[in-house]
Image (cartoon, rainbow over all chains, first blue to last red; front, side):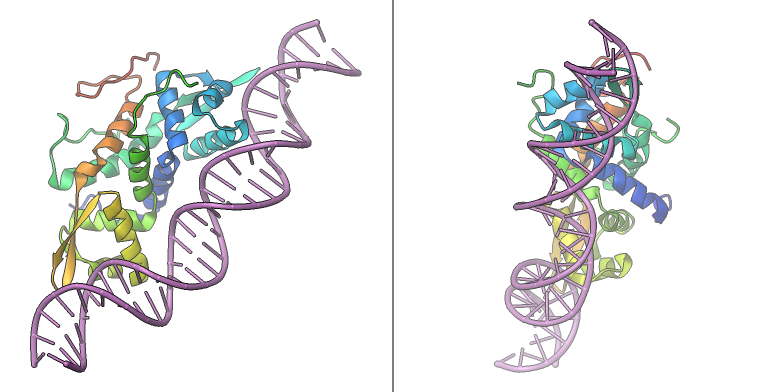
Length: 115
Length: 115
DNA sequence: CCAGTAAATCGCCAGTCGTCGATTGACGAC
DNA sequence: GTCGTCAATCGACGACTGGCGATTTACTGG
């Protein structure tokens, strides 16, 4: 397994992506955006049930991690997923899963590199 | 109150898994274990270059998240990956990545169009 | 028995995170 | 010009995390 030889620069990037996901509220936001691409900030505030400022902060974090994008649509802002940002993390997880197991699902390693 | 989100109680679990990955040192440990299954704690301390107590704490976190297991081999402890713990997180990421593309796997993907 | 090694745990500190209310900024409507 | 709405930002607070050294525990070997 030479494909996983510590390219340390990517580690921080991947860790940042994982950190963006590592919060139930942000995960809810991502799920919501997966179901409803282009929904506006106010809707997200309703769904996650936190203060508007808190949700705005979470959206900022997700935007900074590159996993969502915001399109200004004058009264509001429409958010959507930017799933290509998940590719490095996905590749790492696939590598870890690939080492000793082939269980779970039908596809062994999804090729997320050339997405 | 909320009407359109998933009733999935695994959100906290997935967030905890992501949190365990969301740290460069722990990511290094996982990469090392992918390369060298069954290596002992002392080797991990050498590789990550942090204090023994810090590495032990990171190993505890990874163990608590279920992504590694430790087998006591009396002078030492041998650690290995437990990649099946990554499956829920992997499934979530796959869902997010495939919101608009669809896939032939067993995961139920919400119907969305427009990519 | 005691000594040695490896891992886990403890106590502490500094830094970051999560959350909130309040405020500000942008922009269309009137 | 003024107002209303929505999002972003600010300031503050408590809670948690990451890191370390020091200590304790568990087990083997003499």
